[in-house]
Amino acid sequence: MRLGVLDVGSNTVHLLVVDAHHGARPLPAHSHKAELRLAQLLDADGAIGERGVTALVATLRAALQAAEDKGVEELLPFATSAVRDAVNADEVLRRVREETGVRLDVLSGPEEARLTFLAARRWFGWSAGRLLLLDIGGGSLEIAYGLDEEPDAAVSLPLGAGRLTHARLPGDPPAPGDVRELRKYVRASIARVVGEFSRFGPPDRVVATSKTFRRLARVGGAARSSEGLYVARELKRRSLEEWVPRLAAMTAAERAELPGIPEDRADQLLAGAIVAEGAFDLFDIERAEICPWALREGVILRRLDRLDRAEGRRGTVTDAIVTRTPRG
Image (tube, rainbow, N blue to C red; front, side, top):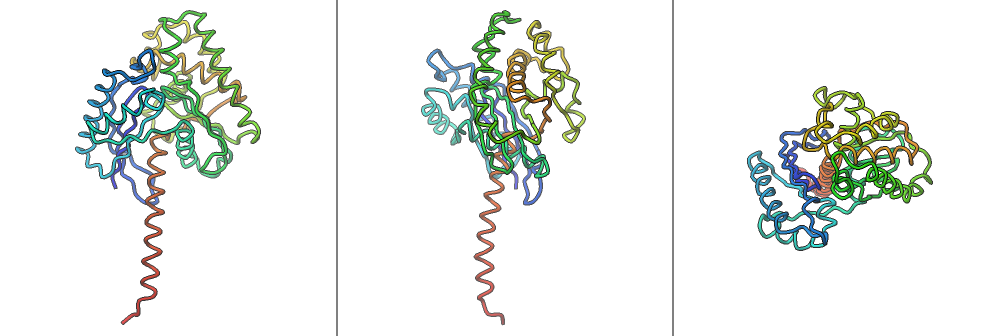
């Protein structure tokens, strides 16, 4: 079947269309993105204002048209931290539902972490052992740990690259004092949750998802995205320690000249690097492998699992009926 995942994130609204079949990996068929930066449209009270809601409605209508054009049979729409944290989230969801017909499923932070963990587990497989997952989005940092498909611990912190850039790094380049204060804030926030994970023991593998980590790995010398999903990529602590001070001294335009850094996200690279460096340091991580799958794939996999279970239940009933039906 053809599924569409409609992801209303802090930076973008992203429609991913995949062809999904039982027992096979989802195959991407189409991608439709719109840069909205919804988290930056919050007013002083933390509400998404009229301009933001109007832009969101228009963006969703365009995504729905794209889904229809591509023959999507089922749409899985969800929202993450920008909508989740808005003080008027209920009103925004009502407007979206009334004006577009879309019922957005607002994921909690831990649920976002669990779904991303599921995607990483499926990508790396059981042989990867105990996974520690890190995911830096536009609005939040997700951390999860576990041996199975359901993590033993999962948390979400308001340490997204877009959120921190907008709120705490106003200069271009940012003032050294602002960088120091952000570093202190990030590390104090992460330190509060380290104990929730350390009691499980060291992971067998550390994996990182999201464009922030992929871009930081690319800056550090990892393979280009054009070389394919299956090329191994990693990010090392040593690379972060080298690049954070260099990024802090650059303007956004200068960062955009780095390999793999798009102009529209160059301003957020420093905040993302500060969060990544803090997580690596506090969790004592030397290197992390980059996972191509993340939250959207986790949403798709969960939906396919539910369909498989439903079909399995129907099959059991049918088999029972057939068994009891006399032949001839």
